[in-house]
Length: 316
Ligand SMILES: CC(C)(COP(=O)(O)OP(=O)(O)OC[C@H]1O[C@@H](n2cnc3c(N)ncnc32)[C@H](O)[C@@H]1OP(=O)(O)O)[C@@H](O)C(=O)NCCC(=O)NCCS
Image (tube, rainbow, N blue to C red; front, side, top):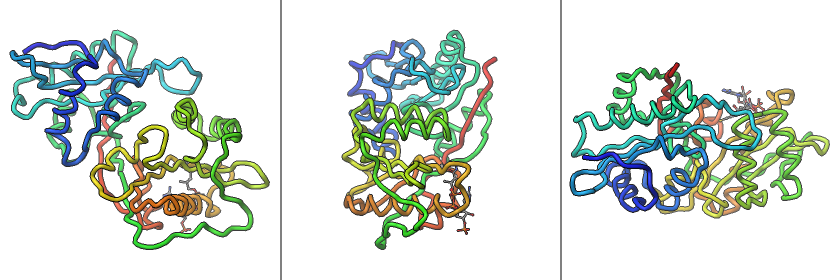
């Protein structure tokens, strides 16, 4: 067995191993793996590793990330992430997972990382460790990680038609390209951090606005909701696993209403608008990822689909 550097020329084998172990729940596409595990600038190439056996076959890998963007958004520069740690099931129980995890942590620590998170990285696959992977959760706990919260992916199979909500105090619309700056300014004011970053990335990757529903009051944006489908400019987090379905899958989220405008029904209404727009685009199933608001989305017929444990560890 040998541990070698993170290299794109191993793509085929990495995706093959992923699908051998995880495709039943999380089918991987090469395009998605390149997007999230090679092209994301936050990938730590020096902290990510591939394990190969004596015949040079890939038998495991770990992808580590730390914040490396130069754009100015409020993200924690001391946070590090393990995007995924995966060992071939025929090579488990021999300490290989521990070895890869420790190497990745040591490398990130050497680069100034003070707090580790499992999943939840920029261009993540998982918001935490999937609940059904109990052994992975146990391994994390053994290595000093503690679970903070459970997060959910929710699903709605759209058994009925949803209409655009009617509320005379506000207007719902799809964002126009020329409103890009208005949206970024709204997000910087109301939701600084990750959602600003993701929106900037969206426009950088040629987004034209069709993936945002906005709600305006007196012409000003007071809320937003991201919607995704197979035509979005990159594979968005809530449609990652759409190969599990035969029908067109859409995604909703993130979303938010200006704190000064909450509790007036606009939050639920923008979700309803998002569903209506996605239905117009022939979506038959909608997924909402990475949320704790199960009761809120239940009001619009979303039910839990996948559960993840969010694990963190202090590296100081
Ligand atoms: C979540 C959020 C969008 C809700 O917006 P809002 O405009 O306050 O929500 P509404 O007024 O439409 O609430 C509609 C219903 O949902 C309920 N609700 C609102 N927030 C809720 C929450 N956090 N948990 C459970 N129920 C909630 C309300 O009580 C209301 O119930 P009712 O119809 O029985 O009275 C808003 O609180 C927000 O922007 N939060 C910060 C960003 C965020 O967390 N986004 C979601 C990420 S997944």
